[in-house]
Structures are given as C-alpha cells and as structure tokens.
Length: 238
Length: 238
Image (cartoon, rainbow over all chains, first blue to last red; front, side, top):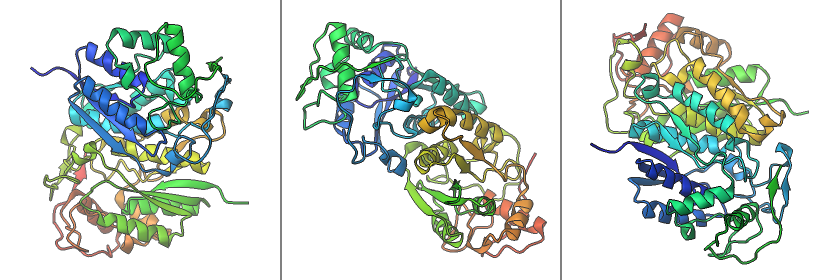
C-alpha cells in the first residue's frame, strides 16, 4: 500500500525545508511545489531543487507565475530591499518586500494539486514569531483559507478528503526551527534565505538574513552558508 | 476625481460579459482579468478581448496559468467533453469539465490585482441556478473566500479597503441573465460559451451550449452566434 501523501510548499529557505523534513518524519510522501514569480532571489529556486532532491520527494513542480500583483514588491521590482532594520512595529510597518496575495496564490495552486493528488494535507512553513509581519503568515489567515478550501473543491464537498493547512512552524522561534531542522537532518547548507544575493553570497543585511543569522546565533549553531557582510543589527518584532 | 474601480473576471462568456456590464452600469471603472489555462476553448479568450474593448475597460490583463491541476479536466486535457446531458443530480455528478480549484486560483489573482489597484471590489459572474454544479460557484464558497481575503492582504488588514466578492448573477436564471444583458447592451454576438468549438462554430451539445441555448429560448431572444448542431436535449439541475 502506498504511503499517505502531502503537498509541501518549498521556497528553498530554512523554514520550508524544515517543514518538508517534518512531513517526511511524519511518514508522508511528498509532492513539493516551488514558485518562480520574478523574485530577485531566484537563487532560492535552485536551493529548493537541492532540498527536494535531498529528501527524495515523489514529485517537485516549479510553477511560473506571471502576475502584475507579484511585481508590486521590492522582491520582484526595482525598489530597494530594506537593510539593517532593527524592528517591525505593526502592520503599518510591513516592509516593501511584501508581495500582495502571495500566500493566497501559492496555497490556491497547492489546493488544485491536492485534489489532483488525492490528499488534503498541505504544509506551509509560515511562522508568526521571527517574521517580517506579513498578514498572510498568520494562523488566522490559514484557518480562513482552510475553511474556504473545503468549500471549493469537489472531493472536499463529497467528503473524500479534508483540506488541512499544516503550519508546524507557526509558533516556533527561528532558533527553535533551526534546532528542530538540525535534529531532522535538514541540510542547512543547501537552503537559501537572502532577498538580495550576489552570486552565492548572501547579503547579511536584509530582513531575511538578519532573522536567519540571529536564529543560528540563538540556537548556538554555525550558519554554513556564506555572507558578504554580517550586520550588527538584530531585527525584532514586538 | 477618478471614478471608483473594480476588478472583473472576464472569461468571454455570457455571464462574465453581463457581470462587466453591471459593474459599468454601477459607475465603476474596470480592470478586467482573463485567464489562459490551456482550455480547449481558447476561442473564449479572443471573445474576452472583444468584450473588454466593447466596454472600454481601463485595463485588460490576460494571465497564463500553467498548472498540473488545471490539466485534470476535459476542458484542458484529452477526455471527452460530455454532450447532450439532460440532468445534473448532485455533486457526485459534477462533470469532467470541472477544473480543480479554478475559481480559487482566479480569485487569488484578482485579489493581488485588487490590492495593487487600490480597490476591494471583485466581480465574478458565478451562478448557482443554470450551471454545471461546480462547488466553487456557490455563494457559500464566495463568502468564505471573501473572509479569507480580508485577512490576507495588507490594505485590508489596515482597513484601507474591504474586499467584496460581488456575484450579481448568483441567483438569476440563464434567461434572466440574457435579458438583463440585453437591457445593458451586452454584445451577445461577441460572447463565447462552447466548451468544444470548431473554428467559429459552437458545438450546440456541450453543457455550456445547452444551458445557453435554453436560456435564449426562455428569454424569447435569438442567440446571435453560430452553431454546428442544435441539440434537442435540455440540461436541468434539480
């Protein structure tokens, strides 16, 4: 008999790689989905390929999204990626790296894939502790998506599957995610977080690098990837 | 001062064209969105272009979606489009033209576009009377999407806009939609419904043709498009 399956959204970053490792550890066979949406840090797509291969996934689809809305972000457009920020205050302070409706779109693709694959289990590495304050990373959003999803697809309406948006990292700190990943064999050296890389060097100053670097420090571990600078700033949210 | 705006999902069929006409009649300026997802009836994309031009929309984006899930349908794949059906019983009887998560995906793109355009008004020509029984055409689904959407995007969370999924056709029969369209100047000759066209001829036998033909008959109007056959079957849902 074949193993139960799950869809995992895999960006190639620390969190999604850890999320994939958790689903594997739970005994699930994985269909991984990665999105290419004009992000500057396309370097993460190749990281996703390496991580997927490392965990011997059943399938890995890389989906190209060409959408105006996704261009309205410094991750994809011409604006500056913010550097050396020290604090995220509230939603008024959501950075320019925010991409409108990104997780809604990604989860919608995953929902189609879920129905086609006959599984309702969708894993996403969203996290509401050490994060950039994006509204579509909160569990409240995930709950609402889940409810909508179970009304959207035939097999859910027929009771053949129940869609569950799994967010095993939601309430973990970055340091906890890094330690957990370490214990589950996540190849941290293959993961990629930086929003503004140059070649194989992470910038060390964008929100994502700051959060990652502080996480490794707090976890008492060494980050195996290479940086071109390491900021003294420490990004916190409160 | 510029007029208030709306996003309209425009397939090129009767319903979405009427939906666009309603939004225009309500005094809104329109950003139209059309999706190309490998549907056999790509003829409808050129219909959408003509309809958008007819109504002088602000912008018309045609978005290509390349996704495995959308291929799991006789609309996009190799299966047979059902012909001359006479009845849709319940969700167990959803036809092979069903596309997993289609409206979820389309509305997710619209949500991104909404935030970028600074409007929360999203119009979709979904209809739960004369339809094929797809679960993502029900108002219950739309309500759940709306709730999720207002938790997903920054400007909704900040109270700068409220996302509303407008479904002005939800409770109208096809005949009522056709009559309403007629009164609002919808160019029915430019719209396209057939799932299985040959050139400029509609098949006259697929669910979509059957529902359209019966609608015109009940409305006491003549359908201006050309058919290669006209079935005696009459598709009903009960």
